[in-house]
Image (cartoon, rainbow, N blue to C red; front, side):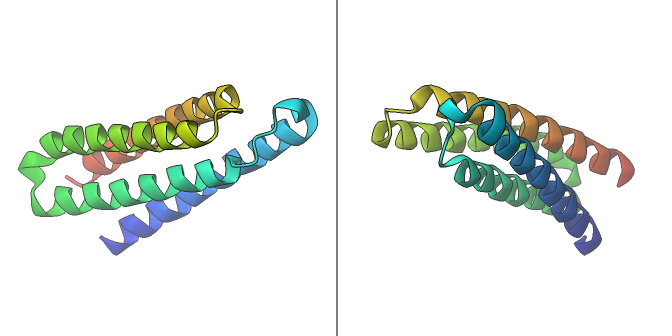
Length: 128
């Protein structure tokens, strides 16, 4: 299990590094007027949540493999609510850059959701 978690950690940090570099490039060169100061915080939030939920899903697949699909759906739903709460809290405090924040959050949500789904399906298929 530790090897799998370590692989997920490395891959997730690599994905986060790519997202950070692309975001930095976009906001410092192409989209200066739309710069979002909390981009790195949002990225760190997505990285931490992704690592936490990948860890939980790997543990569940080992201890309760029969119920894996049910837990996957439940955990994905919980994760979505966590993201929504995060967005609502941020937007209630910082209304001035709501559009930039929502666009960045949506893009990161799509990137990390695709990554998580591909990773967990690959793991589930190869762990049998």
